[in-house]
Length: 478
Image 1: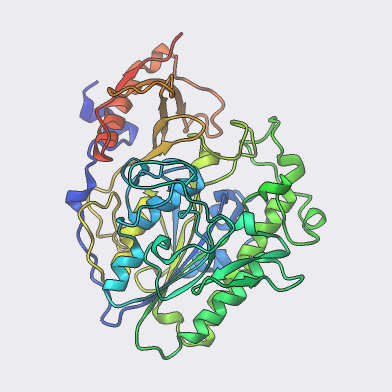
Image 2: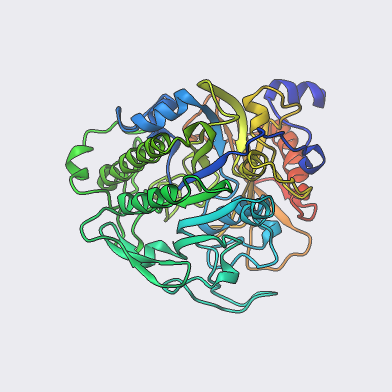
């Protein structure tokens, strides 16, 4: 079969190198406010409007946001672990480019973030919640070991969020569901109110911020970063609001978890309780924008850093190529995102960086690896990629691409060996059309050798476009 014909049938993208295709999206005459709401470790099927909910009626406010705005049906992270995903989102680069390829590696002060670029464009920029980009576990070129996991993040490590700051570098180390603290712009502790659930308290402070901006001369960009529904590390469990265990005990078991072990049977009700609280508070934020008269001129974005497989793919909750690690909810509303539209194209977390910058009328640097989602929302996008690229770390050194039909992943066989060539071995191949829950790994199936070869070609191009050396990819051992 000729390559072009194969690509057309398989729904694959032959072209990467997206930087050359960037063009700024013209913003409205009056620049909008931008409110970015970010959860942590949230599955796409925790949101009912995605069509296969774990619990019906869990997310009425996100469903309403989708009905008012735009829902992206095929949204994926570029890095299924917290710190690297956040670094990619803030900069618009892949982890191989920022150097933040694992947790515990700080974002270098030389990196330009959305905050820097929007500030240069005249925005009041603020951050509230979990940062996870300030501490270094080990030395690396340009940085020394530094620990502020339970201390204030110094201004030079805040990624350009200079006007408003109320955050903790690693929020799961400074708080629990009903106690804890963050640090304000001056480095002073701000305690969560007694007996106030963490999501509610953070939203209280976000609303406080919104009220302070009413009538202000500059538009604002506020990034609100929740830790929910991430597990509470030191207690080794998920912590929903009180009553969650009983309220959400009768859930639908997602197909990817059926027949598996993991800890989902015990933890799912609290996980869903976290998701319900997030939904309730997105409703509070949107209601406050309406009350303040800001709703018509505020872009609201809602997504997460990665998903959650409940220890069914490895010993943790993410860090794998599978959809229950990488597939995420993504909903936008406000200027540029209206009408209840559903976008079916493949979308990556790195697309959100140019999306935010375009909303604010900021210049798009040529190094950005994504494209503005406004072009998908208004139908003007041309040659949009038919695949997303994923880099995987900590559990392995892995690379993957995901198309509508195929999942193809490779890994370094011996990650401890320093290999300047970049040698990988094929790890997974899934036909998502026939096997949506990724139970049948076809990576050694001779009938799919041509498919693997085509996907390997695309993956190599993606890796090179992300600043990596041209890799050698070997077949999986039979």
